[in-house]
Image (cartoon, rainbow, N blue to C red):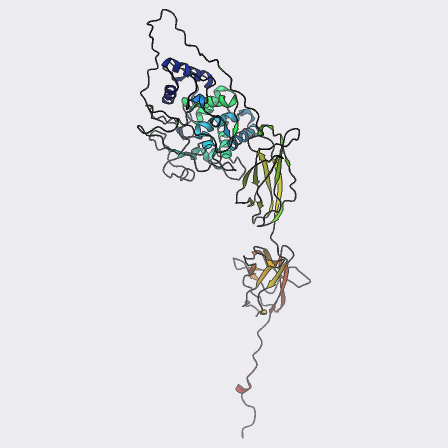
Amino acid sequence: MVAHFDRRLRKAAVTTTVAAVVVAALSASQAPDVTADGNGRQTTADNAPTSDTSSEESATGNSPYYTDLPPLKSPLPSPTTGTPSSRGASEAGIPATVLDAYKQAESELRRTKPGCNLPWQLLAAIGKVESGQARGGRVDAGGTTIGRIIGPQLDGNGFALIKDTDNGVYDGNSRYDNAVGPMQFIPSTWAWAGRDGNGDGKEDPNNVYDAALAAGHYLCRNGWDLSDQADLDRAILSYNNSQDYLNTVLSWLEHYRRGTHEIPDGTGTLPVGRSDDTNAGASPSPGRTGASTPPEAPGTTPGPGQSPSKPPSSGKPTDPGGPSTGPSTPPKDPTPPTETPTPPPTPTDTVHHLENAGTTGLTAIAGDTFAKKISARAETKAGKAVGKVRIRFTVLGDTDATFTGGDKFAAVTTDASGVAAAPALVAGEQTGAFTVRATVIGRTVPGLDYKATVTERVADALASTGGTELTCTPGGEFADPVEVKATLKGAVADKVAVTATLIKSDADPAENDKGPYFKDADGKTVRTLTGLKTDAKGLLKLPKLYADDTEGTYVLRLTTAGGAQLDLTLKVAKAAEPTPDPSTEPSTEPQA
């Protein structure tokens, strides 16, 4: 980090004296409890808290991290391209879905661990130094990163030594662990700290909702109260045990507390400086990287925003006027400090609640597309419609229903009337009720729930495909299989559930206790079969039928959802005696 600061100062300073002033401004305005030494390097108070969390127990395994600092409040000297004070809105802003994940996590921790006092800005600060806010917000509608964010392998070569704990499931490495995802958890920590933040039933470190909630719980353990500076420092150090890491996170925390703004997903910029960057002569530190791009090798061409490596200056100001005869006076800042302007409220900031935009009767047969789309309207407290607001629709519950395309998440922007319509909802094969929840991305307001139901596939007619009589001798088995075809309004009815029952008679649908029967997997007698389904052509072939020793005529009844019914007659009788052939019978006439 020292090298990173020196590199920035060399780029921005006109003289070494001005450089010292810039460092002082950085220290005073961005990092609490941080001062600058005579060479312009950051130092911390002697009594700064430390963490006894081992690399294996930390969130990140003490891997590398981004070292870029927030924009300066009072730029000095005048901003030039690439200096910290000249960064654009995309670097200071937070991508909408990522910001929403931080705020949702804060809301959940307020409910479950109110004594922790977790601010979402802390999650944003950590997310900034860990992954550059999920690489500038490259996430899908459900918050999962587009491509994995993998840190370097922790093989003890400049980093902690942590051998594989997840068999490569999360990091793709079966020899060593790597930090994973937007909050850069190592797999061994994720195994106990992981959470499901978006309600999809999975705990995925690559999902910003899951990772943000997990980070919140991690920072709130040990009974820490994050409104207390000492507990806050301990929590941050337990995430990554480095004083430079602590100072960098605190700098971004204060920056976000002064105000930030939402930017579209995927438009954020990736930080440049990293704690394992050795280009400016610094030795590698056991920090972390939030991206899979390897550090620049010494002697190579610097990347965007970086300057070529130069020998560090002494940092001591020259004194052309000879020795001073009185106390030295630090140079004055010719530009008075200015407060960071508060950005005007966005449409998202004005949303007070969501209203149902007329969606009713969400019912569909399994496999069909719901006839009606789900619509929500964003409104202010006064009930005025709010356009240009992103609404996330999430399929919740025990269901395999999805939106068109197979996703359980969809993000849609409200139109001028404040309405956002979700993509068409497609029913799966699983029947029953489930919920679709609409929420405002980037604002914590109560979600709006829609109840939906998937009913069974139906058929209105069943017909036998066999033309022969179904007969069997006592104690034998029926030679011809039973096959039927299901239709609905004349069309093939596929995947329709069929129940087959051997009943006592047409007038008595109770299950018979004698006559023909099926066999279960253990060879036991059963006279009712459920869970049967027609194939893609609407056909169903029943298992083999057997007969006990009781002769008679019996009824096999097949039924489906939708009212289709078919009765088939089964006969159990002894085989007929063969008719004698007169030509083979002995003659009874008297011999001549």
